[in-house]
Amino acid sequence: MAYPKHVQRIAELLGQLAGIGPRQAVRLAFSLLEKEDAYCTEFANLLQTMRTQTACCSICFRSMETRGIPHCDICNASGRASDKIMIVEKEPDVETMERSGVFNGLYHITGGVISPLEKQPGDKIRMRELFARVKTHPARSSLEIIIATSNTMEGNQTANYIERILQPLQIKITRLGRGLSTGAEIEYADPLTLEAALKNRR
Ligand SMILES: [Zn+2]
Image (cartoon, rainbow, N blue to C red):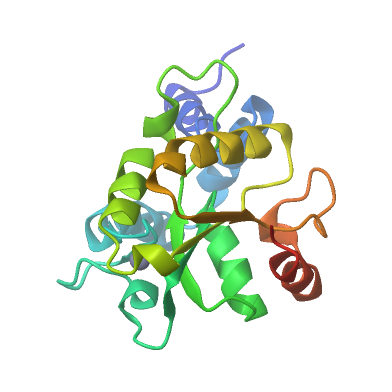
């Protein structure tokens, strides 16, 4: 038995999204089918608009609305400590960190972690961009890179890799202290844990 071909195709597309398994993708496709016209029209249009009107900060890689400035409001803010760059895996990590209010520096979003057999690990975590950013940083002697990847195998492997690549630049590199339990992701950490992890960085 096959589903109608467009439902099938929508399910295939949804199944390519992070965290969506094949069965869930089919369920989502059918719930889209049951939605009202207005919902589907807005959804379809917005998908296009989102792509054209959302850009990526050229410094930290946060997403932002396109408005003729290449940098996000965090990178642009004057009151932040520009000599502290925290490396996180994904955008929600920045949101969690910002909500906790414990960090006042800048960010670099890797966009992923390195898995053991990665062929081009540097490309996957925007290492070239980070290296260039650190190398040309105006306050390199006081610069601190705080690695805040998840406390998972891949997160730690990514942290080791980052440390190794940045080492020749002779800057201070720290990692969040392990107030974060094994398997912990920054995204789901509470403010007190983050504050302790930041204070105990080494
Ligand atoms: Zn930015």
